[in-house]
Length: 166
Image (cartoon, rainbow, N blue to C red):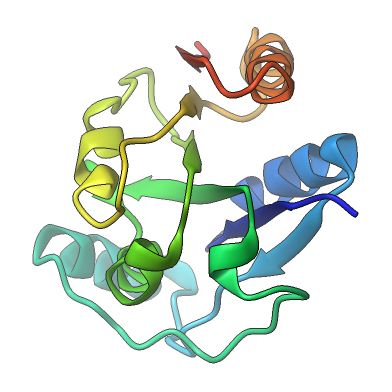
């Protein structure tokens, strides 16, 4: 059994697609975070950005994992960038469960050329130890597959790297 967990939030499906690929490659459990907030369309996009800027913590719906969170050797957390920050549901997850996580790695998806690597540090505020690996990817861009595969290689090698994709 793999002691790695992939947990993510996705508003549009881009983060979900990437996290599914990563969990399949690693053969690990995958959990989608949900908060029950309507984030569809322009109104949902605006709501999401405003919550991120205000560092709001919407309650995340209960989720199930095979093991207690503290039993996973590594938790890979996937989030889109909202207004230069991690998504509000991921911030809520980290606030509530960050201290339970032994080791973390981050997968950040973005819609622009800006890398948003500062989001790693924002997320590290909620966990026991700094992340052991991270990547920021613009899905469907040239190089996205390369950076995903580089991230996977670093995770398989014990989590010793960070990267970004054009």
